[in-house]
Structures are given as C-alpha cells and as structure tokens.
Image (spheres, rainbow over the protein chains, first blue to last red):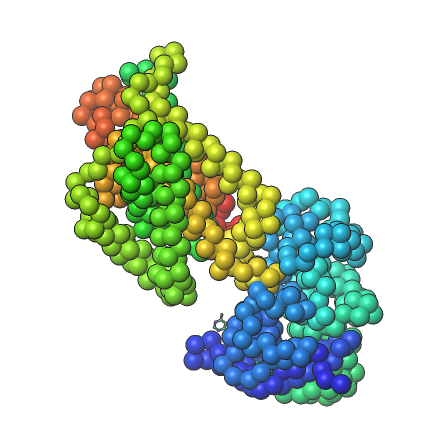
Length: 238
Length: 309
Ligand SMILES: Nc1ncnc2c1ncn2[C@@H]1O[C@H](COP(=O)(O)OP(=O)(O)O)[C@@H](O)[C@H]1O
Ligand SMILES: [Mg+2]
C-alpha cells in the first residue's frame, strides 16, 4: 500500500537561506502524523510548501498518487489536502458562517455544504451561537475552532494543522486535541505540527522531530514520548 | 447661480465622477496594495474609446443611440488596458519592492498619454465630444444639465451593482477573502490572480463610464485629462479610506461638494478674497484631505491598519 502523502528530499529556501534541507516522510491513510520541533525548525515552511504557497527548490511531494510540486496553491485543496495555517488566519471581517462557506468554496453541493456547516456547529457549538458575528471578534481559541472547521469544509482526505494549540488556555487545548482524535476516528488523516510536544506525541501514530530544517528523529508517538533525548529537549525534563 | 443648493448639486455631480474613478484605485489597492497611478489614463483612454465609436457612427446618429455604443466601446478599451497593465506591468513585479510597481505605474501613465497624443488623430489638441443637449432642467433654483443626470444615474447604477456583486456573488465573496488574506484565500481554492484581474477590470469599467461622463460634461476630452481627474479621484479614495468601495464614493462626494463650495464661498470670507474661485479649488481639495487625515489617518470609512493584519 502506498502512502497518502509522500515527501521525498524536500528542500525549501527563502532567497539564499534554506529553511528545509531535504526532508522525507510519509503519511499513511487514517493516521495522525506529527512534526514537532523548536521555533524556526522549518515546520511551517514544510506545510506551506505542501499546500503550494511556497515552491520547493528540490524534492518531490506526492499526494494521493499525484505529484503536487507544480500544482498552484488554489488547486491543491480540491485534491483533498486542507491546511489550517499557523496563526489561524480566519477572515476577520467576514462572519463565522461566511468563513465556513469559504472553506467549501470549490464544492458544488449546496445541500452538502449546509449539512457540513451544521456538523461544524455540532463539533464547536460556540461557532453556531455566533454564526452571524464577524470572525475577528472571536477569542483565540474560538478562532482556532473556526480555522479547523473551515479547513474541514472542503471534506479533506488529509487535514494539515499548524500549531492549533498556540496561545490557547489548557481547557481550550484539551478541546482541540480531543477534536483531533475524534476527526481521526471519523476517518480523516491528520498531519499535525505542534510545539506542544507532549500533547502531540501522545496522540500521534507517527512522529518526526525537526531541527534546523532536517528531520532528526522519527518513530511512533509513544516511542518518542519515552525517548530520552526528546524528553530532555522537548518535554522540558533534565 | 451661486445659491447653496446649486453648489451642493454641482458638488454632487463632480463628486460622482471622482467616486466612479476612485473605485478603481480603491479596489486595486484593497486587493494588491498597489496604487495604480496609471488609472487616470485608463479613464482618459475610455473617453477616447467612446469618441472613436461616435466618430465611426453614421452622420446624424442620435446621441441617445450612440451613447450606449460609446459606453461599450469605452469600456472595452479601458478594461483591456487595465487588464493588460495588470498582466504585463504589475504582475511580474508582485513580489518586488513597493517602489518598483509605483515607478512602473508612473511610466505607464506617461506612455498612455503620449500614445494618445501621438497616435490618436488630432489629439494634440482637445477633441470635441458629443453633447446630450444644452437646455438644463430647473428644479427650484437649481439648474441641472442632462449630462449631470447621466453622471449621477451612472454612478448610482455602478455603485449599487458593485455592492450587490461584492456582497452576494460567489466571486464577490472571494474578492473580500482575497483582500483580507490572500494566502489563506488560496488555501480555500480561490484563484487570487483571477480575482486581481477582476478588480482591475471593474476599475477599468467604472473609469470608462466616468470618461464618457466627463466628455459629455465638459464637451471635450484631451490626452492629459486623466492627470488631474486621477489625482482628485485618488484623493477621494484616500479621503474615504483606501480599500473601501463605499469610502471611495463617499470620499468623491465629500471632495466634490467641498470643492464646489470652496470655489463659490471662500472668496466671501473677509481677507480671503484672493483664495476663492475655480483656480483655488484644487488647493482646498488637498487642504481637506490633509485635515481629514490628521484627524482620521485611515480615512472616513477606512479600517485601522491593525484590523487588516
Ligand atoms: N517569510 C520568510 N522569509 C525568510 N525566512 C523565513 C520566512 N519564514 C520563515 N523563515 C525562516 O525559515 C526558518 C523556518 O521557519 P518556520 O518554517 O516558520 O519554522 P517553524 O514553523 O518550525 O517555527 C526560520 O529560520 C525562519 O526564520
Ligand atoms: Mg511555525
């Protein structure tokens, strides 16, 4: 069986500075795969390249049997790859409902879209209560829910989440993490980027540790959770 | 002639024209943060496109038959030039330092003026534009020319159409998304290049309508008519809050009315006799801009920059 996402020797540069220096990993269907690593390791750069916002200088990305490397960003979501970006990036002056509708921009089934908006409200009831409110008025945690809900509106095969717990209260973080597990149980494959290594590793099937543009260490979530070097560097133990 | 209602009406007419042109600046700026300084020339070429159509109609054609055809001809010219400028002048510079597209815009502006000056037959002098008729309507003490009715009606139709398009159509929604966050818009599947082209095209269309209205109003057009009109419309766009389409129209109207009133009344203020009249109206327009920006740097309807992030 071939993987849903296959990244081979991916290299990405900003001008002359290489931020991702030849990384390879795969994401199997139905899995949660996580990339962890300190600030500046190249995690966001990797996700932005997968969704076409950045063009790689080398390597190959295959998604669902199709090479993505030359596909423009706006055509990637229709292949089944959705991206909830770092910093949430909701559309602040559109309403919550309009944000969700934009997540389904390329879909042509109004009834299905309405049903999925309802599903997003079931998943995150606060969004339903505020559906007519400008998204910019939401709290950080609520915006994160909206960003996730919006990414789900394209009915992705693979959902990429970039630091969904950033800046959230512990309770809100719990909510987001349990949602990720729930999404997996519903059949969505997830590529999760996190600085909160503890939370990410405990729910990941596969995990990769990134350091200055390379993958330093790979293994199952549980393996890395118990790996001494990971515990030292990323879980704040000494 | 100098009653207040008359001045307000004059300001309304002038302001409608500024507003129509200002839409082009503001839509493009709202989406790509570029000041298209060649937009005044897109307005000017629209007027020449319309005149070309009129010149080629059979002698004796009624202006009422000719006008729709002139609007179509002017629109085609302006929209093509606007789209061409985006595609070949601005898009290659999308990621260049801000100064590069700005210089390009100024160069394009001069090139378009010179192209008309050199190649349009007789355009080294002002060209006579057809008229809608010279008998004004009277409403109370206010004289209203037919061309002014056309101007206001065109501005109203264009604004309502644009507002409906942006608020209710799928492409309009994509436009709002692109203006607020272009990268994320692409993640939604929005082809932002297409949205940018549409913004330029709508700006071109409205500029052409304004170009025809200007020709009808002043009875003549010239290769350099875009300079001052463009500068005023840009002022209107900034005054109203650049990036905001309602702000562009409001800014146009405020500017038009302020200008009309300033040229009529400033000279009545003791000690300011020298500062009234048509010649000083441009000065007052910019004084108004400066005062508004001192009080509200984001313009009348603009969002504070922090909200855009
Ligand atoms: N827009 C950019 N221009 C230049 N360098 C950048 C840009 N974005 C990120 N970088 C650099 O690329 C490296 C990786 O950054 P990033 O992918 O954001 O890391 P992470 O998401 O793991 O924190 C860092 O050294 C960062 O400074
Ligand atoms: Mg990051």
